[in-house]
Image (tube, rainbow, N blue to C red; front, side, top):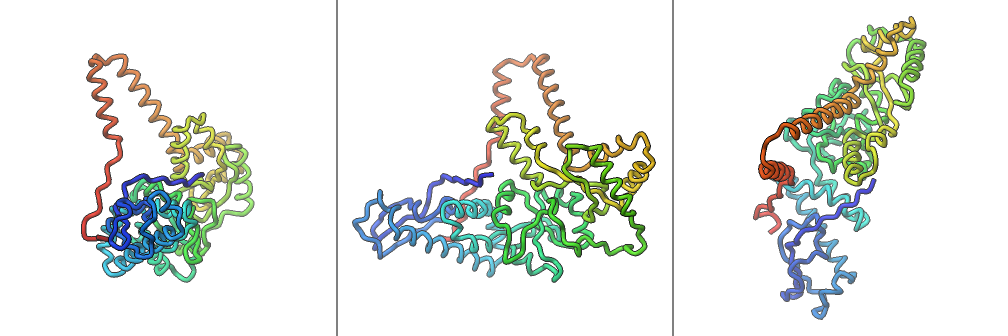
Length: 390
């Protein structure tokens, strides 16, 4: 999927040469994602006879842009060390632009500023309080010696993320998980891939989670293990029942209280973004395309429902196939899709009924539609407070 980021803003940095104004809005020096920075750049090495048209073609302009951007990023990193609270307040206003900048920098500048931008990123985490932010370096410092990956989960908000069954094993062991709640985060983590040798791994991906994290602390010795033969039989049975709905069935240690989850190479957040993008581009039936993405059903061998399902499968009970399908339907990812479809049908029926029974004048209907459209318009971002980077 393309990570093309194109931002169009007025730039507030002016370029001077020996106190002579060369350009009032020097977009060749400041990239779009730093458009909110205000100030002047006075470069004595620039020839006075340079024209505004060929400014962007000079090697000097590229070097000047690199130097200015690096100075800004290093200044912000220094501010973050000096006053974390002040920087976090700044991040809540302008954090999106650094995420967009990470992608734009890779696209236009071969990731020249990647390392500096990574130091400025801030995220909420499962072990921190609501609104409490930490950097990637803070996360590394909090890791145990046994942990080799940086774990994250993408969700619409903090509450939904913490309630996810994918978080059960991590909460059980107290392992910190980054909470990513913005749509752009899906592209950001796919681009970062790793930070100082530690890979970024989604808790709901098909990738194997470290065994030390999944190992339970309570009652392992007393817990009766599900026989290997029973596991193999149940895996084969569920795979046969579900057919092409899944590309695999396996037993997992990532679950504590839930009977099953569905994992995929693509996160739920990314699937939602793909659905929106395909709908906007009119690419046929989005559900059919998304259903073609391979998914794996992971079963919790310690859950009573799964154990009983194994017993029923062995006894060839007539209702076993229906129960296996119910387990699939009740996994978080699939049940949300079905609830969304039910909601869409209900909304369509309600709209149809309203069209038939409504006696409201056309002008009032038009006014209501206009008001609804206004509510969906993006909120205008506030300009940066004076005092920083002035």
